[in-house]
Image (tube, rainbow, N blue to C red; front, side, top):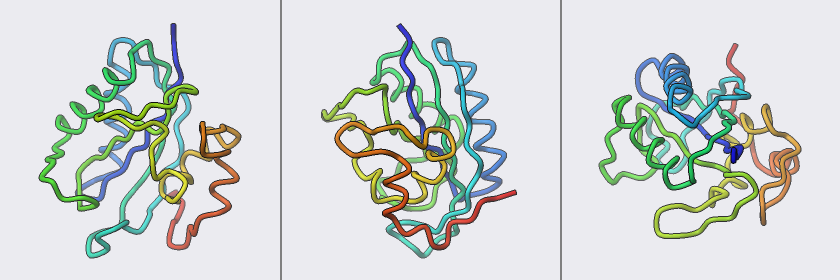
Length: 161
């Protein structure tokens, strides 16, 4: 049985747009994953540690036969393959960040994974690209993507051509 999952992508080191496109292509080559809708790219200000370059963010919808934890493992491995080093710094610079934003209509909250993503409703850099591909999606326990986007400050977020 296939499930639609939503993945948020971002990074702010190096040629981020090329890296995001390559990461999307890499995900599409994973057995049990089919990449569907892709958002546009957005330049967004950093979150948390603001003393770093702006980010480029995007989102994709995938259809997958993988379970959510196996999919999380694929996302973490893909980050590593593209040079991501997790050094314990939260909200710091990174080559690639892949977040499992939603997994079908499931709600998951365990030691490894929280879905929908716990801070999704606060972050324009997630909601803008997500609204490109799933504006009317209702995130379980959170709300509809386009309505959530209307409640956040998207100042400084720029659609890239």
